[in-house]
Amino acid sequence: MRKLVVLSCVFLILSGILLSYPEIFPWAEESTAVSLLHIWAGIFFIVIFPLYSWDHIKGHSDRLSKISLSTATGILQFFAGIGLIISGIPLLLYSADVLDFPRDIHLFLTFVLALSLILHKISEK
Image 1 (cartoon, one colour):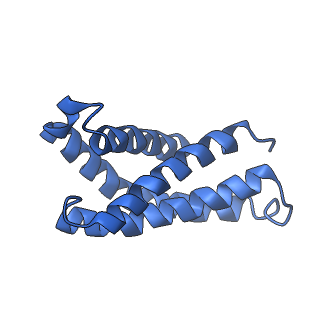
Image 2 (cartoon, one colour):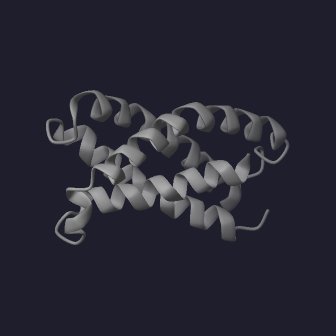
């Protein structure tokens, strides 16, 4: 399940960046396929992320009492993921063109999640 969650995170990060920067990727702005895949992967993320996070936290509860890079990046991933879900739902319902603040928060949290995934991968367990 971990690989599925990481794969969905990577896909959502990449497709989100394609959709967020139309000046760099002009073909992605008009691509309905990229938008729909991002939306469907986001809905899938809404379901699997909290389930996996809870299971992962319970499985590693003994290591959470020690402060380390792995613990800090894991906590950052958890809050970034929850923030992406919370900011993504209004964007799904009302469009990213209408809501500037949730769109900016969503984009910021996308980079936070990407950075925390990388740091969590290279940190000592």
